[in-house]
Length: 296
Image 1 (cartoon, rainbow, N blue to C red):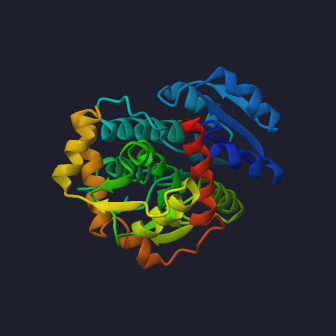
Image 2 (cartoon, rainbow, N blue to C red; image 1 turned 120 degrees about the horizontal axis):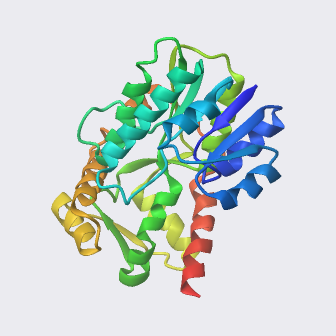
């Protein structure tokens, strides 16, 4: 099959593209950076340089594809991340409709079932709603849990203060996922028959914040690393003091509050997803490599 991959060769694309090529598919990857073209071609795929903000480029690239994998790239420089997601979702909807694509695998997130109170995650809720307007298109919404690498946002706090603090923590349970397991699930989904609408949750492990802190602490030489649960107000103030723009600070506070109260994961838990292969202890070693490289 002919498959178009958006998101270049980032955290998910890098393991995904070789899997799709190995499965015998003709893969085209859209990248915003010309220097990624050589990497993409070395994987056996075709590179198209351009932006997902360019509807005409998307339409041309999608034409003739059997499957399009859509995702909204992270752009924390956007004035409003929720609206950035909405605008890219509208671009995808238009390009899919104009190009005649009949099957889409869309990267969403756990919590996308909620229509308010999820901060940044509300953006992927909008994208799902927009794509679902495509009446004659088969769509699978991939909803991964919390990315392991989001924990790297706490690296400086650990280094400078010796603990983790957020408005989720302590015994809160977090559904974690590794990009490699997401890539494996997407590649598997591409081999399955399409259905009109499908939700597929992807997680690698499920642990409390205390367990996460302990696993990371063992690998970085802080065996008693603590994850403190603080109030929404304190968390928002910490974001602002760190220079996070006010609207983004609000979104992050809402997101973590929704994770703390369990609403973000309620639909995921209801679906009882299977676990991937990469466990917390595996990722803790990856975390330590990055963490220690900054200490040198």
